[in-house]
Length: 601
Image 1: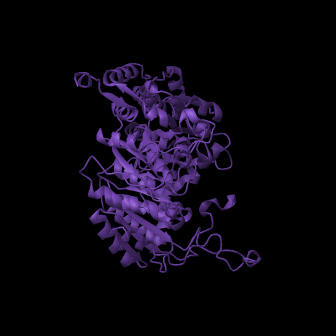
Image 2 (image 1 turned 90 degrees about the vertical axis):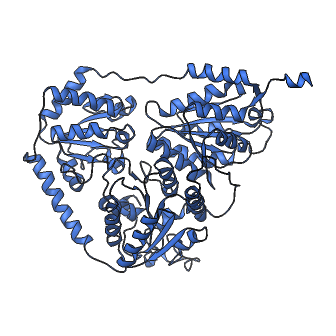
Image 3 (image 1 turned 60 degrees about the vertical axis):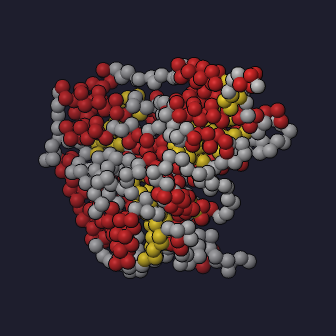
């Protein structure tokens, strides 16, 4: 008995992982539990980590990646081994494409049975390699703290992105003494990677300011890289001190209000087509910005690229590249300009031309928006949604948008006034991210309403996770949440369940036009062959009752087809701040195939 009383307490690997995560500041985790990571999730919850349980790893991964963007800290995704890891690659790759900090942790098969066909065996390090900045397999419990800290640090350093930690099931069963655990954690903390601050040469800053000062038609472009850097105050100071018009990328919207007098969004073609110097901050010259090439851009435009990644600048070969965090680079630029100020002024010919064109285009669009078209086109309900969102004031809701026509129209009509309040398909143009993003937004910003404006195709990818919303709202004040067993059911219902289960303040608005782009748009020549009587590949069930799905889990559903009905549903659901789905019936022929990317389809 005396010997038993003196036996040192043991710390198992699951608890050690949880301790390392909490020491690193992790307090939220997204995922799907099962063999061999259920205990890891339970241990994390017991230490104060809020675990948001999903029905599939794809949506959980999208949530983790978006959480990383919204908070600036790595979102953590937990998956089971084998298939769970593969499903989680959707989120990891999304983080990589969008440059968002994210860490995926997966259990894996027993090391002793490697190569013998063990349960869910897969070379997971090889599987994640194309999408991971840093991958590590913790082959022993003693490697856990250093592996956790390094993976989290790498995810957030430099250009943010996804990292991966693999923990074999046999390692998860290993133990160390309490004193050994503390030493491993302390030693790993002391060795954590220090953030490297890029030093920009004074001559480079002077050259950048000189280019802007001497430009006849300067333009400032910024994207979600500036958003994750929290550079909105520095951008505001730069724009308003110099009087240079600005153009945000879709997810840069809100860093400065869309209603700002120097906003060039409504005159985008003129702005990028005629500018002679473009300062591009935290945005890549990829397809979203037409690669910075003619005919969209002037052939002799001079680009000043501000990017945290040296390789990105080397790839684009700008006139001038400034490597560094957007916020810090802008601080230095502002200081240089302050010492020798200049300002275009609203009467400057370039500013006047941008302002005039923007006002003309806004007037044209408002003429279309003013019409109450029934059956609904895309413009009429989007105007009503815009006005309802603006009516909420501050804090502004986080708007999540996906779908071809729905996202394209929403980008022009919906107005962003605050930073990081728009999430959409992003750099990869990924459909199916919407409800995962909604959950991330509600968890990251519990003071804000989340409004998803979804096409019915995008919504259908992950609709089951609305079940999570109800559960979160019900447990809003509880730190410890019960884990849910895994259910294998249709993807359409999964995210609905998740939204409802967590009672999240999310209102999902579905633009229901009966299919991808709007149902059957085939020409007579395409309706041939032995299966010509089947529904078109783009068709869904006509009049699908998406609003009924959320009611099955205890949420509130609305079916609307007129302005009065939509206004009433928005007012009631926005006020309630509980999970709701508003099913908006749209004319199936109102939109265009492939939205604004028809040339690619």
